[in-house]
Each structure stands twice: as C-alpha cells, then as structure tokens.
Image (spheres, rainbow, N blue to C red):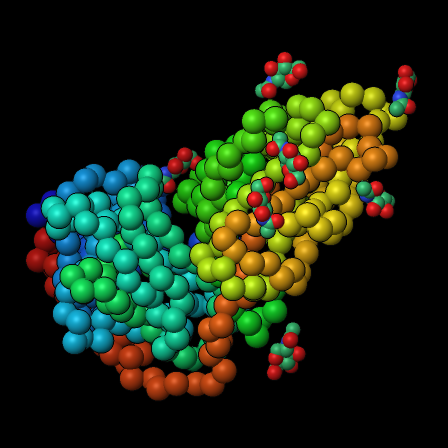
Amino acid sequence: MEKILWILLVFMIIQLQNAASQDSLAYAGWRIDCGGDVPLVDPNMTVWDIDEDFTQSGINKRTLDQQPLDEMNTLRVFPDRTDQNCYAFPTTMFLQKTLRYVIRAGFSYGNYDGLSNPPTFDLHLNGGKWSTVNTTPKSGPIYHEIVYSTQESAILTVCLVQTRDGEVPFISTLEFTPLPDVLYPHLNPNVSFTLVSRTNLGGGEIRYAGLFTDEFYNRIWTRGVTPLNCIQVTTLQDSNVLGVENDPPVPVLEESIVSNTSDPINLTFELPTTTPQSAHFVFYFTELANRPMLNDTRIIDININGQMMQTVETEVNKCKVVTLYPVVVSGPTINITVAANKSSTLPPIIAAMEVFTKNDLEPIQKNTNANAQEHLSVSHFVLISVLCLLVSFIA
Ligand SMILES: *[C@@H]1O[C@H](CO)[C@@H](O)[C@H](O)[C@H]1NC(C)=O
Ligand SMILES: *[C@@H]1O[C@H](CO)[C@@H](O)[C@H](O)[C@H]1NC(C)=O
Ligand SMILES: *[C@@H]1O[C@H](CO)[C@@H](O)[C@H](O)[C@H]1NC(C)=O
Ligand SMILES: *[C@@H]1O[C@H](CO)[C@@H](O)[C@H](O)[C@H]1NC(C)=O
Ligand SMILES: *[C@@H]1O[C@H](CO)[C@@H](O)[C@H](O)[C@H]1NC(C)=O
Ligand SMILES: *[C@@H]1O[C@H](CO)[C@@H](O)[C@H](O)[C@H]1NC(C)=O
Ligand SMILES: *[C@@H]1O[C@H](CO)[C@@H](O)[C@H](O)[C@H]1NC(C)=O
C-alpha cells in the first residue's frame, strides 16, 4: 500500500510539473531514469520518469556499488546484439516550441553484473554516430552531451550499439532540455555540437538542483583543477546578471582563479579524437570586489595552442564573456593560456570556461512518422486509467 501512495505522489508531482512547464520551470527539461521500475523523485524534488514507454528492448538492472545520485543506481542493459536497442521519443513530448535541445546521456556502470568489467560501446542519435562511450571506472558518472536541433513533430531515436565482443551496452539516464534561442547565440542551429568541457574554475560542481537551483538550464559545471601557480578567489557576479551572455549561474561567477605570480594561467583539456576539428570556446571573467587600486588594470590575453586569440579587460561588478569560434584544433591535448597583457598591472583571472566541438550529426530537417507518438499517448492513457483505478481502490 505504501508503494501505491508513493506512485500517486510521484504522479501528482509530474502533473504539477507539466502544468507549470509552460513558463520558467520548463527549462528544467525532461529527465528519464533508465532501468527504473517507478518514477523517481530526488531529494530536491526533481522528477525522473521511467523509460519503458520508449523502448522495446533491454532489461532493467541495479548497480551493486551504490552511486551518490539516485538516478544512477538503475540502468537498462542491452545484451541482445540482434535487437535494435533503441529509444524513440516523439518531440511533441517536450512541450516546447524551441527546436534546439541539449541531450545528455548518463552512464554509471556501478559493477551491476559483478564482473568489474566496464564496457565500451557506441551511442547513436537518429541513425548517426553520436559518440563512443568508454565506461572505464572514474569517479562519478560519465556524461555525453550534445546540442541538437529538431522539428516540432519528429521522432528522436537514441540507440546503444555493441562494438566489442562481450561488452554489453547500457544506459543510466537521458535528459532533454530545451535551449532558449538567447543562450549560446553563436552556436549555429543548423549544426550539432558536442560538449567537451564546461568548467567552474575556483569553485565546486554546480548543477540543476530542483527547487533550490541556481542553474536553470540543467547544465553541469564541473569543478575545475586549480593550477599550482593559482589561488581561488571570491569575485563579484555581474550586478546585471540577467544580461550576461548564456546566463551562467551566480555561484559560477562568484568564484574564480587568479595567478599568484605574473605567470599565465595554463588550462588544458582533452579531445576524444586527434583529427582537426572546429571548436567553439566561451570564457567568463569577473573581478574581485576589492580590486587593489582604482588605477590598476587587469588586461588579459587569451591564447589557444600558443596562438593569441583575443584581449579582454575585466571590470569590477561586471562579467565579461568572450566567445571564440570557429577555432580549428587537433587533439589529444589543447593548451589554453590566460596571460596578463604587457599593459596590465594585475595578474590574469578567470571564472569559467566552456568548449564545444562541431559534430557531424545532421540535425533533423523534415518530419518523420508519428507512430511512436500514438503508441505513447495510448500508453499514457493506460497509465492514467490504472492510477484512477488505484485511487478508487484505496478509497
Ligand atoms: C540555417 O538554415 C536555414 C535554412 O536552411 C537558413 O535559412 C539559416 O540562415 C541557417 N542559419 C545559419 C546560422 O546558418
Ligand atoms: C539538492 O540541492 C542542494 C542545494 O542546492 C545541492 O547541494 C544538492 O547537490 C542537490 N541534490 C541533488 C540530488 O540534486
Ligand atoms: C602565493 O604567493 C605567495 C607569495 O609568493 C606564497 O607565499 C604563497 O605560498 C603562494 N600561494 C600559493 C597557493 O601558491
Ligand atoms: C604555462 O605555459 C607556458 C607556455 O606553454 C609555459 O611557458 C609556462 O611555463 C607554463 N606555466 C606553468 C605555471 O605551467
Ligand atoms: C596607483 O596609484 C597609487 C597611489 O594613488 C600609486 O602609488 C601607484 O603607483 C599607482 N599605480 C599605477 C600602476 O599607476
Ligand atoms: C600543449 O602543451 C604541452 C606541454 O607544454 C606540449 O607538449 C604540447 O605540444 C602542446 N600542444 C599544442 C597543441 O600546442
Ligand atoms: C595587449 O593588448 C593590446 C591592446 O589591446 C593588443 O594589441 C596586444 O596584442 C595585447 N597583447 C600583447 C602581448 O601585447
């Protein structure tokens, strides 16, 4: 009986969220806890839907090693190589007119099979290869995130493809978040972009936290490594924070790293492939509340792989956003230096950085069939009827 009440509570929260999703809450997006038997409500009241309406294959499993995030403790595994191993999502479910989406797939192996053998496999989106997922143990879940444009009534497919004998693909979460047109205005909507890095320098991880969120667009700002010659400092956000390009969350802007010497800040990141590719960089700069002297200046040169790209001057109580694209880079390691310009009296500072690379996946250009949509509305109808029956049963 307790379980039934729990299901009803979750159902009511989902209904409330759907009702509210016409306005600002909508940007919280839509989350799926793959392999779960019942919808999940995490400690901050974020709802994770179950996945069984959207796939015909795979089996539900639980991790043996407990994961800190509840949604990472269930997974769907796809042992049958001959199956399609796909999810199909009608975009009409997304409730938004916006056509750009951030799609994020999450993977936590958690030794679910007791074999301590995390697999490598491929992830496909609408028939094209999205990425290779390597789940070799690392602390925390592995995410693959893409900015993707679609049509208002289309079917999005996400498939898990086995590429190595005996290595069984799985998936733990799927998230779809509409990306408002005002965000990342330089990312061409006719092209797909893979997120390579989104780093909060000087602070901890910031992510969507339901009722208590500072991050409204479901982005994950990972904790950046502070280089040895740098210290963490508290900076001022922009007083006009709503006007800052890409609307970064306030805690990200309130913490930065600053060079403790006159040396530059060196940052590196890894690209999964070594072929030259077109990258898109976004840098965020804020300033100390108590900048030493009014006549001081902090003028920063941004270099990528030793090439000087742009100069920016920080201002107290203002966030400066520098977007650089397209920058052709080759893996595996990209070197970024944030250096004091000759004319600067203060050492360099930086609050956050994002890197995207252009992906070969074609965005959806035309409508596809509507069968999955019918299947979905029917199954939701069944779900609602069952819940009504349960309610009358309890009463
Ligand atoms: C995207 O494609 C549409 C239709 O082909 C075109 O009108 C538009 O200019 C393109 N946008 C960009 C930024 O290239
Ligand atoms: C819940 O919110 C708090 C405060 O923002 C945050 O620290 C925590 O990580 C969130 N938990 C989850 C599961 O999102
Ligand atoms: C910063 O520089 C000062 C003076 O050179 C030094 O004493 C201090 O240990 C440095 N701190 C870090 C974290 O490098
Ligand atoms: C940062 O990179 C520059 C150029 O590659 C190098 O000369 C310098 O020694 C590096 N600084 C640190 C602190 O690693
Ligand atoms: C800034 O002004 C102070 C006193 O007002 C002076 O001592 C200092 O040399 C000046 N610094 C620069 C870089 O001009
Ligand atoms: C990045 O820096 C490392 C160490 O300084 C160097 O070995 C490597 O060649 C640099 N890569 C590029 C693309 O400049
Ligand atoms: C310093 O700033 C000036 C003016 O913005 C710029 O022309 C120059 O390239 C920058 N870099 C260096 C190393 O002087």
